[in-house]
Length: 225
Image (cartoon, rainbow, N blue to C red; front, side, top):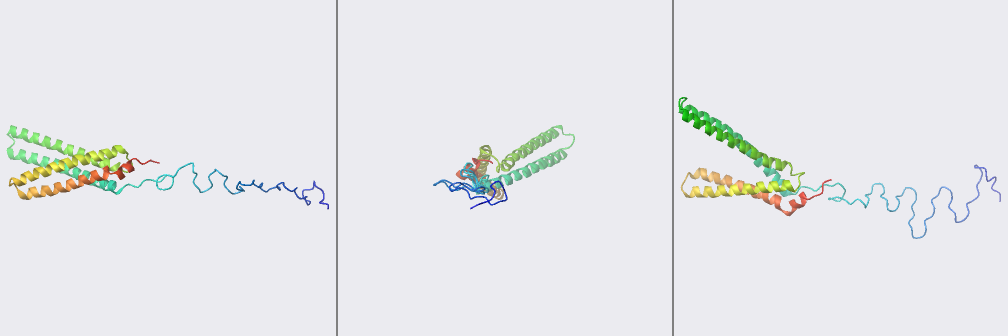
């Protein structure tokens, strides 16, 4: 049977010998090895749209996932922002009250009383210093709360120390109020101060619990991508 001129590219070509692959077709894989044709990822290489096993998935089940902030840390963050804002307001009120007190004391004493003027000036200076200190301390909880979302162990330690000091001062204030209440002092003002002290103590303990538990520890030890 004739197949024409074998050098003619347009003529009918003879069939390929048996056992040899034809032109343009992938070779048959040996027995036991999966076939790897065109359009399929090679074995050991990541395919399109599929993660490579050489790159482990991050927290959350996929690479680059972020660990969510625990509820206790969120609550502590809100409390620190609120306490810092209240401290700023208190510092401003202390400054304004000190200025008004010094002005009223100076006018009531008369302009010729040198000792009274010096005393008023000393009181005003002390009140201003106290207000500035209160404003400066207000930056502590605010900056700590602002860095909780991206901070590490140092930010957590800062919040725990602040919560501990807040707890200490709140408990001390409650003890003083109880002492004043037992000595038949002005009951109304003492009770109101005790209510504020209980609220402050509860917020301080909330900050401590929210930042010192194991979930918060795992969050601040999380890998950052």
